[in-house]
Image (cartoon, rainbow, N blue to C red; front, top):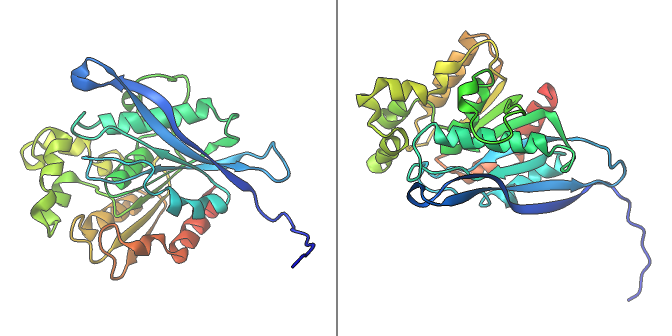
Length: 284
């Protein structure tokens, strides 16, 4: 069979830049140097090479105990197809550093991408923080700390680490209430490892790692997802985040996903992608 066809150009191509070093931090026992990586799904434009794309920074979960920043890249292609550059970020786990080390890393990745905005054809005024579980906690922390300089450490400090929107998926909010409200005791230790102390024994450390502590008039709009069958991170955590945002006149939407547990495949269905896309279109 021999055919001649014409193919219209209806969308950008996508490229993957994998495992780019965005920062160097202390490694083994503080005696070596460790690279922190990020991967970028970027656009190969069909028409205008001067187009600037908004960015979604993705933070995978893992209880702050293990992080594979590439694990969700196949799912994130759906959002790349909607017109976003995707930056999936590695951050140090709690075996290597206590909080706020994870937030320091996240902000370092954002500064790195602002510095390299032209290289990746991104709009530095349209940055979104998004993540799941422990990564959802980071997304929330980024959304409430735009005006707090103490979390910016490392290189590229001449560039801002601000984000414009936050999208936590079943994210931890208060380490103490997340631990107390969990229906599974299997993960209680992750909060001790994150803080360096049990949250019930150190209110100051717990408050420092709680996004509710920082909500103010500079807090960005939030889109919050949580499943009503989550036995790891209680849905009450997400509801409390939403309520506190609204009480402080921040913009927020909350979606309870019926039947969804922790790390549920429901979060990667087209309906969720459309809700996220609509939210981004509304505020960006």
